Length: 90
Image 1 (cartoon, rainbow, N blue to C red):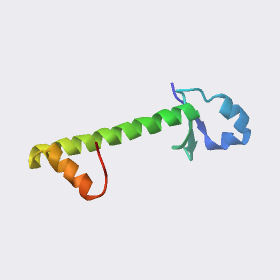
Image 2: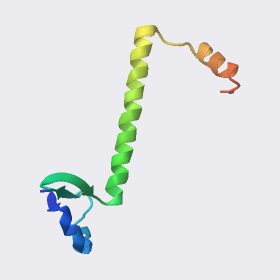
Image 3: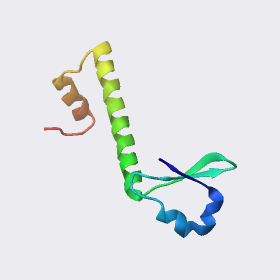
């Protein structure tokens, strides 16, 4: 069950921070509506890693779709592409 408290309780921020546990953020309301979240750094890091993984997978899917629609690039063409830009690969 989420912990939801009004932002005004931050006057006693020590007691609010004691309620924050890993995997259990505190949701702060302002004028009765959700406005802010307080969470452990470990949770924030996990969220950022998950978002980066989703972005990476999204880009991989775009690449696969592009290859299926436009055709795949041969390894020789890929090496020539990088060589023309001064990048030595293998």
